Length: 70
Image 1 (cartoon, rainbow, N blue to C red):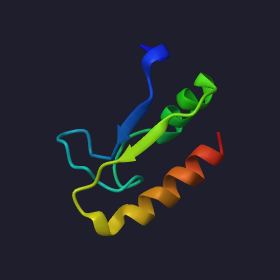
Image 2 (image 1 turned 120 degrees about the vertical axis):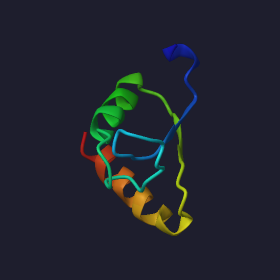
Image 3 (image 1 turned 180 degrees about the vertical axis):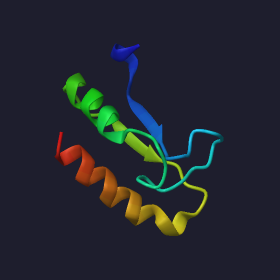
Image 4 (image 1 turned 60 degrees about the vertical axis):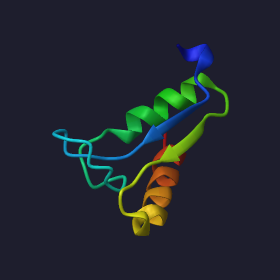
């Protein structure tokens, strides 16, 4: 599937339902995801999916922090 991967949609949750929480407020290991994307060694678009759009900047900042430290 890797050769066809162009973008991913991410959001956080507590592992019980599709919560669409801001990144860092649930249990998803985004560091693992960032490492995987870095390993691909090409640009991948990221779509952050949230139910509450007022938290989008928080999630963007969290993703930048995580992805810059892998």
